[in-house]
Amino acid sequence: SFISTVPSKSLIKQRANKSGSNPPMTYRVLFFGSASFSIPLLEGLARDPRFEVIGVVTQPDRPVGRKGVLTPPPLKTAAGHAGIKTYQYESVKPSEVIDELKNLQPDLLIVASFGQIMPQALLDIAPRGAINFHWSLLPKYRGASPIQAAIINGEEKTGATVMLMDAKMDHGAILTQFEDPIRPDDTSDTLYHRLSTLGAPLLADTIIKYI
Image 1 (cartoon, rainbow, N blue to C red):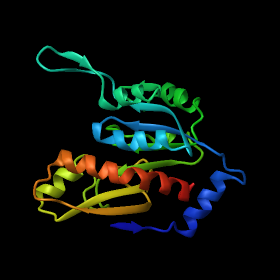
Image 2: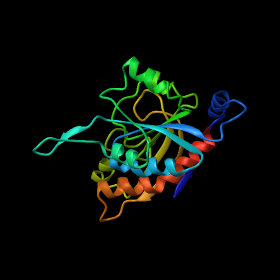
Image 3: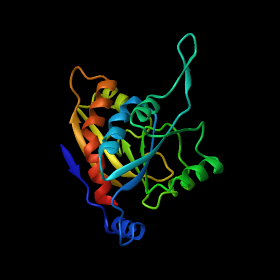
């Protein structure tokens, strides 16, 4: 079930100040993520004619397995299949990284399980702000493992939140949320992927309503 959250007057004022009088036909999106369960969100935006995904920012390739085979994060592979350029950094805090991403001229940033703390200077590079997709019904279960926490604590339902971002972890104005029951046979993996699939169209529509 969906829980609509109407932006406050202050948010609407912020949106008007950022957007100006002539919004673009297509919004330039820079997508930050790493986990495989972020892929449906990326693919949803990439298919949507209202958005142009100009790049994916993700973690560096890591050695995997006993042989230490250098393996790209799942989101890099998905971006390659979609013809989207990937940017990989150990940290997005250095000024030269922020400058490089700013030069891409994104309209907005979308963040979905990126795995790094993003400084305010980075969040500020997009005139229409930064929006986070988080796999819990905030304010409950902030942090990196919200689905695991919901299952361990015996919750009967979980969900996802689309929110504005600031430099604090999972802290910002909530734009919308939706709920989904936790089934007896659910694992954290099935829940993450189901919420991503359900949330992809909601994320796109929420972005348009906000910006």
